[in-house]
Length: 359
Ligand code: PMV
Image (tube, rainbow, N blue to C red; front, side):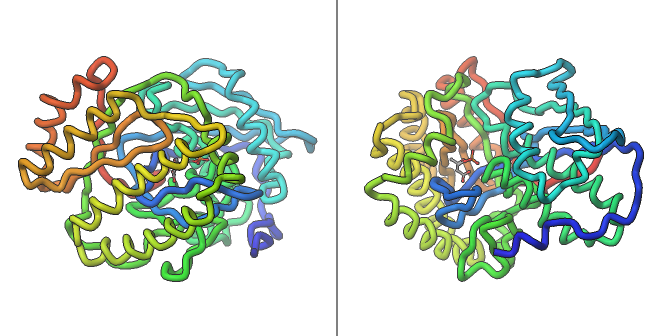
């Protein structure tokens, strides 16, 4: 694998002081990534919708200092110092040191905030780590102005991946593939790439309402969940199935076969959770209200000949997916019939978005 391309060779400029602010989104996988090998190499290819409203905004101030052995940074989350978030970021800086040696010449101050409520059960690692990666790439671009936009996006995704696998899919949009797949031109295990084919108009401006069923801390983290795929009896067939599902979904996205989309996306969500149910030790992240909502969605779909469907992340929250043309009736349905299954009736209306934005 060609990781050498991401080791900087020329840094022609000297920058004493700089500050960059990036807004990067969360994403929701349609074909799921669950299982990896070192260093953050996925066992199968995955694809996600980039979101628009659920995002992180991060500013990093860089101040030149003498050469350091470990990254030196202060971290503020929503205006307050957050010591408990620091180890994860420190680990991230360690993982990227070969690719971003210049960070050890700066004192960094990081300010970060999320658009979605903290501990809403929405993974903030994808948006959070992609935002830091994008800020690092802004510094690298100033140190080497010859870098192309394409390379910068690729390397930002490459760095984000080293922090959290799914973060590699949070740099661009509206659909991003991560993981080498024979039918997706340019795809790689090292970084996410934009879905390279023309997408049917039915998937434009697709809607995602995130129903906040459980906002508590997950009982089993994604890190542990991925590890449990190592000795999992169904692992190999799952990885094969996911790659086949990506082949199928690639065609569906191009030809607009929405019923096939629904079938595949819901099956992927339930299969992800089936892997959890059949891990050793087994665990359940869905809650009773997750199942209530799924059943209501199925009934509504049948009774109204709707194209609503659901997907799940590694948690109890439900992502309700629907075409923009069904926005009004489905939003009414969510408000009238599904919000009662959410904690404090809370849900977030989001749409598919286009990736990282410099502010
Ligand atoms: O990026 P991680 O290591 O937190 O793993 C996330 C995996 C899922 O969100 C469950 C699926 C996916 O493809 O995003």
